[in-house]
Image (cartoon, rainbow over all chains, first blue to last red; front, side, top):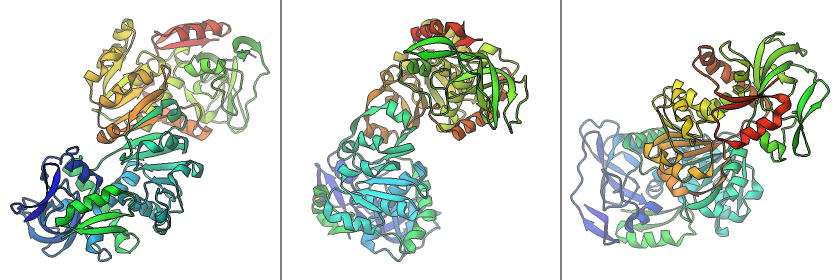
Length: 313
Length: 313
């Protein structure tokens, strides 16, 4: 097979041996694979793939068709449309995924949408529901709401009955994010006036601090899953005490296989039914052929996009 | 009645009208009242009493005998030994407490211990169990373990089957904190080598940061309930993400009445049985007559104590 390949901190379209599915694994012919910030970091050597993933093939999410089942894999059949979060190796013609990590693709999602669905929605669902228990009627601020995870978070929060304030830097995207279910879309400089928030989802980083803590409600929770704009901030522990606040932070990629499987099963129970009912979408900013991964990564790095950049086979 | 009274940022022993128990309330003749850091802050004007508490009488916890029941109060009888967390007003000959905030005093506790029990154990139990769900077999670091809340936390964590590392600045108290159930007692400069910790209880503040985050285990939780040594620290959100960490912070005093009642009921279910069985103690560093509150507060401020400073009637 051919695969996007990291060599000398650059992307190539190289030949690799076809992967073989082991026990409980499924071989997938990849049709689409979303680009994520971690892929770009990996090219620059900052974010190596976890053990068990191909070290030189990027790609944290994929969608495609089942072509072969490994020993003991029974949950899917050849030809099934599937998607998954993977530790790496998604940007290839073929990929091997454990069946407990696979999600069926609802008919409502086109390939390029499915290729950008798994990482973004799993990350958003895990953060908002598994980690900080967002509830109906709560007021949430989603920072970076026009991005891949942000647009997923806005939709899930709205589905769950939360009141959603979204921050979006590019004014061209305000209307689109409103269309995803946000009650209000504001410039990042204006979110504090829209609080207090029960939950704040941080996808941007340091520039929103310490304002995040000021805008938080009593017993509020700040969930940090992206810090692309800077990781360091000053924190007043006293302010945190007075708000009885929680700051949680997480990443999906570094987790062990059983935790990723648990996240996938939560997606099957709580998110895929919404996608099947047509209540969730993946805004796709642009698609690129896999052989043009370099152009796709460049476009991703420019920012200001709405939703996902997706590679297609 | 007479009461310790804050006037002109100093303590006096003044006459006040006797308080009267309202609906659901109980009048208590106070026998002992522990000194807490918040009392000292209140004298200096930094930490006003919450609405509904006497603004000029300090005292966040008390123990004494029931003398009169307000309308509808049925849970206790005159003569019962009781103790409670109160929003203020504990350092007086009489105090009024809602019956849902009252705890029965186990026979095993002497008055001066009971007077220093409610605030410390409620704060420690709420922090470790209600807030961060400390579990059997988890490894916890308790900072400031020789203080009132710290010594309570060490005992509760040990009772719950956690492995307890305690930091204590005064080497004279290391043996005593070991006697409370700590598996290891170390100088504050040495705790990082004893990690990684599933839970860190922060009762000291900024000096333990950012080391706290470095010493934390994956999925670890840091619970902040005291910052006397400084409230401000730098925080790396990226480090927090990589640990999938949680920082929670809280105070008890500012909570509404129903939340305090819930905390008291949790104490009745989960902590008082241990006290009744003789498995918990309150180390009392010194007692002072209420009329000598000034001397007691001075002793509290000197630090280096083991357990509580308690006023007695």
